[in-house]
Length: 314
Image 1: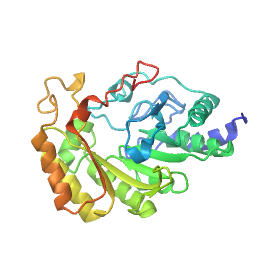
Image 2: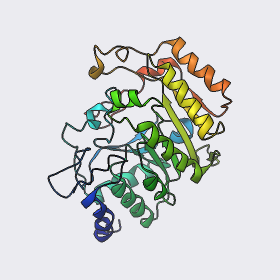
Image 3: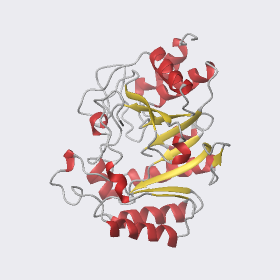
Image 4: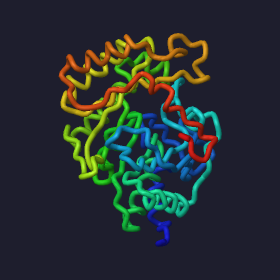
């Protein structure tokens, strides 16, 4: 394997001396002990690098996607299924050496993964850019997928135009009070809409597939329907229709599953009702969306990772 270019890594990480890469705009020096909102330093903190078959079919393919799960998050969703690694009050996961990261990814590519996905990367953009550059320097050109909560700045997304092939953002909320209450981010709807508009500017509404049916370029907007909050979902779909396009691909998710952290918190302490999800599906069609994926309600038990395991999804 080729050596890792430490100078390039240092160059990418230099912005973390005054970190403003996400909408939190902390200005933290992540090379010091005075960390910002995400409580993450300038290292490469990854909870898991594994193949994952649970994404949309055009993302996973038959061999799965090589997903890189970063530690911590710039949102703190109280219902997060990845809470074992995403909550900022817990210690960050293992700090990886650059050569370990590249080697692990290449091993999974050699085993058949065609895509590399960066999961919750918004607070680790410099590290992500470095990984992409190093893989390309090693002669590897997989499809790079940016799997984000969409709490990103326009400037960050614009800087990824030549690096990311497929954008896979969540659009969680249209309701700023819900986003404040559940994710500690009252301005989420504003930033998410602007960020996804920039993704749309770059990729448009077409999803380009290769001969194996794997997405090579494009945009897929995900939305998780929350129990008791149908109106928020209807408003998210209307925002996308009015402000972006009804021609984009939508992944309308019914997989919500209450974790231990929402025990006793009505209505998040239950699974989604059939009639709730159906209302959102009906609005999806009524607005004119035709591209995307609808989930079975039984999927709520299929997406509960355990990051204490070597492979969280097995």
